[in-house]
Image 1: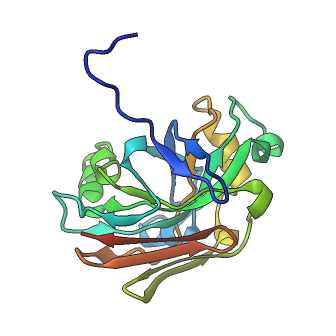
Image 2 (image 1 turned 30 degrees about the vertical axis):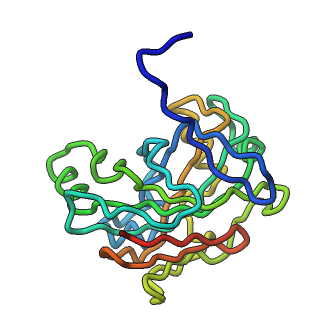
Length: 227
């Protein structure tokens, strides 16, 4: 097969304890999946899970230096548990959903909050607020055999050493199995899909030069510097 120009390199994420890498197909994100974060974003009820996407090539595997994005004066951090799927399907029942999970990672859903807020006010899509270049730093994926299926444990993030987010996986409104099952009603999931599962309260604005460190108990940590 010939192409009019060389295709982009496939996106992959390192796997902890392995030389093999996890090939990424799609990146889904769950909005407002912690009640305290939903409240700080203006929601006051447990609503059904809703989803948005990031391009796979917005990921920054392993963290490190991340470019501060253009066209924003309010870049914010969101630390999240990321689910990596090794199996997929459509209309997956919750009881079978965890069988689809290959492993877990720590991810940062960086958000141009000012662009997102303007889009929401006008009823426009959020794409430019969420799906920008290098907007999805992610750590190594820890296979289920090592991590199990974490259902509780700290989810935290520091900016320049100051604790900004400090939640617990047990506070998730929709648990991992429910998220997978619900998402599979809208799209057919497949091996290589990643799901960012939402963030606890404490999101705040960050600047060029800031160092962000975050983690999920039992899964790992991730560190970036905005440049």
